[in-house]
Amino acid sequence: MKIVIMNEFLHGPIWTYENGIVRRNPDMIEKDAILQELNRRAGELYDSYYEFDSNGQSCWFNEDKQKNTRVEMLSLISGIEERLNEINDGSFIVENLEAPAGRDSAR
Image (tube, rainbow, N blue to C red; front, side):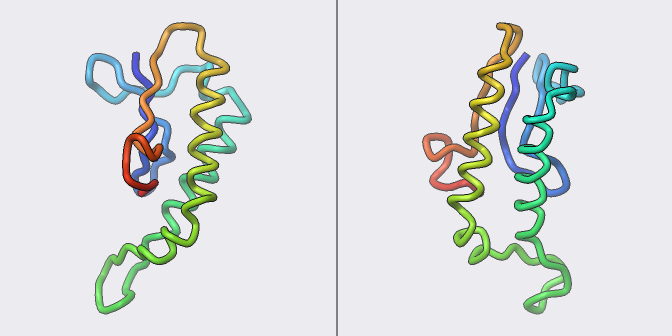
């Protein structure tokens, strides 16, 4: 099983894959209050970058807001990765697509 960290609109950054298919997060993730709070906060921050009926578009991504909150987002993503590594019982690997090594910036 692979836990992938990546931002997506209306979905927190924690994604579980098994055999290349998105699956429900395992209980060890779903029941971890720390992970759930970090996932919620990162998801809400990422969702806030989207504006509707703004700048002459039905859906507009606010890159300035993204840049201005980059440190906060990277902190949340780092916290998620650290917590996943803490609770990992060896049953999954973690792939962080949002870390600076994975992307130029947390998108």
